[in-house]
Image (cartoon, rainbow, N blue to C red; front, side, top):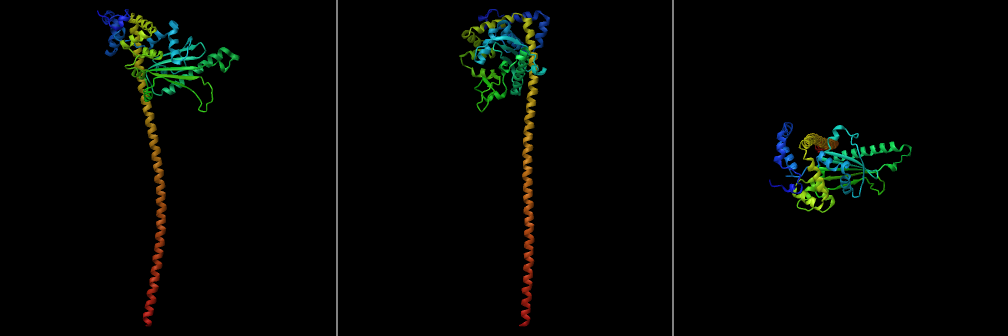
Length: 365
């Protein structure tokens, strides 16, 4: 059987027929496979067989290849590239924070690490960019900062100083980014820190890096990989065999990461269970996304109605002012009519006096 392009670089990859044969031989795997939509069946077979690359952003696969407990250099290299300076991971932190339970389902994957300088980096991957991304990011970042404060203060006790609190970095990667990002279609790296417009220099500790992979992918069409950042984002965003081959040729370190994933695919049952969980998460995320979008649409309509109510109120006030003006004009007209009527009476009286005098003169003559 002729090997596909990726099988030539990763001989461990098995063909679709072999994978399907194993699934068919085990009733529980056959039942699970049959429960998936046809598109998901094809997706699973494509990445396991090397017809396409593996979806790196899936939580199970991302954590498998980037888990700092297995090889800290991978995640260190990624975070260093994103932040622009070399970092060293000290430890993984639990991500069972004070976020609401349904809020955590908004994340495709979520890894929090403490760096050697004491700062905190949270890498989030979202399958779909949800509404209110700015508000959520601010809340998550504040949560990390508060957790760090409590942890450090608990350790230091009376010797605690605010100089012991270090930066928190929230790195959000979107597979499909919110529409706000598409207002800047040429930008796929957004870095924010809090600054004063007066020029006052204070470190407010919270920094945000947001990366829309869909925009990056569009920008990289017919373009070669030229930087370390482009290499990492290509690794995360592309499942095209030709692009993957270009990537591992220019940056050999990524070949070992793909090998980790294809070794994982040798355990068909294990990877099917992982994939099934990813599909369940996708369904939950899609539901939450729809709720968010409807909520956002409702708020927009409420704002539009509020604006229209204000416009109507202004028009009512204008009409009221015009009514008052008309009332004043009517009063003035009424007064003028009274004056005219008085003048008419005075004129009639004069005419009557003139007529009486003329009659008297006529009798005397």
